[in-house]
Amino acid sequence: MTRIRRALLSVSDKTGLLDFARGLAEFSIELLSTGGTARVLRDAGLTVTDVAEVTGFPEMLDGRVKTLHPRIHGGLLAVRGNPEHERQLRAHGIAPIDLVVVNLYPFEATLARPDVTLAEAVEQIDIGGPALLRSAAKNFAAVAVVVDPADYPGVLATLRQHAGALPSAARVDWAAKAFTHTACYDARIAAFFGRLTARGERLQPELSVATLAAPLAFPHRLDLRLEKLQDLRYGENPHQRAAFYRDLDQGAGLASARQLHGKELSYNNLLDLHAAWELSREFGAPVAVVAKHGNPCGVATADTLLDAYTRAHAADPLSAFGGIIAVNRPLDGATARAIAAAAVEAVIAPAHAEDAVAALREKKNLRVIEFPKDGPDAARTGGCFDVRRVSGGLLLQDRDGATLDPSALRTVTRRPPSEAERRALLFAWNVAKHVKSNAIVLTTEHATVGIGAGQMSRVDAVKLAIAKGGSATRGTVLASDAFFPFRDGVDAAAAAHVTAIIQPGGSVRDAEVIAAADEHGMAMLFTGIRHFRH
Image (cartoon, rainbow, N blue to C red; front, top):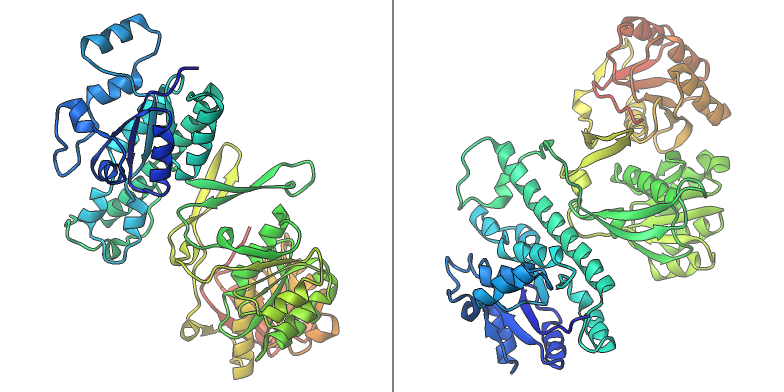
C-alpha cells in the first residue's frame, strides 16, 4: 500500500471538515483546496495550497471553472506504475493526487427553498465536483475518494491503522459510494429538467421554481433514487430475502416514520401499515382502521378515537386478530389501552400521548409507529408514481388521487338516497377505494359491516361482504369499486336488506342494474370514477 501524500478537499457541506483536515495533517498530507473550503481551512491555521496555484489559472466564470484542468485530473487518473503515464506526468509537471474529499453543491436543498428561482437552481448544478468524484473513483486502485462526512472518522482510523495508507478494500467501498452519489445527484437533476420540459414553453431564469410545478412526466429513461434503510428478517415468506428502501424523491412517508416500541418491523407489517395509514387519511373525522393482508377489515369514525377503534374492531373481530391499527389523531391513553388488550401486530398514529406509549409498551412485541407530521408528501401531491414490477420491466402509473365531488354524484334510481344514506354511501366509497378488487363494502354511516375483497367475480364479492356482515347487513349501504356487469350483485344485496348503492356506472347493462335497484326500492348513485386496486 502506498502512503497518502496529497489530498484535494472541496466541499459544500463542511460538517466535520476541520477535524478531518487536522487528522490528515498529522500524516503530513499536503492539502489542496478551492474557494470557500480553502478559506475555512486557512482560517483554522492549516497550511493549504490553492488549486489555482496548481493549475496556473484563477477560479473563473463565477466559480463555474476551478478544478477542470489537466493538472488536477491528470494527477487523479494517471495509472500508478504505468511507465508512459508516469513519463507524461513528469513531462508536464503534474503531481499525483491520492485522496479526493468532495461533496456536491446542494441542488436538492436549493430546490426545497420556497422562493428559489430557476436561475438559482441551475447555478447549484455541480460540474467540477462530480468530475472529481468520478475521476478518483475510476482510479480507485490508487486514489481514495470520500463523499460522505460521516465517513471521515473511519478514514482517519484506517490511516492510523495502516501508517498513512488506505487499503484497496476500503478504496473500492468508497468508490462505489461515490458513483452511487453522483448517479443519484444526476437523477434528481434529470427529474427536475423533466418537469421543465413538461411545461412546453419558454422558461425565464427569474421565474420561481414553485411556479414550475408541471405534472410529473413519464421519462424516456427512468432512474430511481433509493437509499437502503434496513435489511428485513425476510420477505412475504421466510425463504425470501427483503430490505426496506427510502425513495429519495418522495418526501415524507412511511420510510420517515419512527418506531417507538416493539419488535422489528417485517415486510408484511410495512405493507399493512401503508395500507392502513393511507386509508385513515381519507377522513377528516377521528377514524380507526384495522388492516390485514393489504385490505381493511374494519373502519369506523366517531367523535372520539376510542369509540372509533371500538367500532372498527367490532366490525370483524375475527379478521382483526394479528392486524394493523391506524388512527388519524394523536393516540390517547384510553384508546391505547383498548388496542393493547387486543391481539394486534402494530399501531400507527401521527403522535402518541405519554400514557398511550406507556400502555402500549406493556405488550413487549407490539410495534408502535409514529408517522412524520412534517414535510411534503409526494404520494399525495402527485410528485411520484406507483411502480409495480413485472417480468422484465416496471409498470408506472399516477397515484390514485381522484377525490369524489359530492355535488357531482348522479342519482340514477327513482328513489334518491336519504341524507343519512348519502353520508353512509360517501363513507363506504372512501373505504372501497382502498380495498383490493373486486371490492364490495357494506357500511352504516360510521362503520364498516362487511367487506368483500379481491374476488374474481363481483357477485362473489357481494356474497362475501354479506357473509362477513351477517345479520348486521340490514339497513346498510353498499359501495362497489367498479360497475356491476349484471344485476345479480344488486339482487344479492337487496336480499340482505341493503338499502342503497354507490358505484361508478358505465356497464353496458347499467339499465338492467338500475331496473333491479328500482324493483327492490333501493337508491343508487353513480360516481363516474372507478377505483380498481389490483
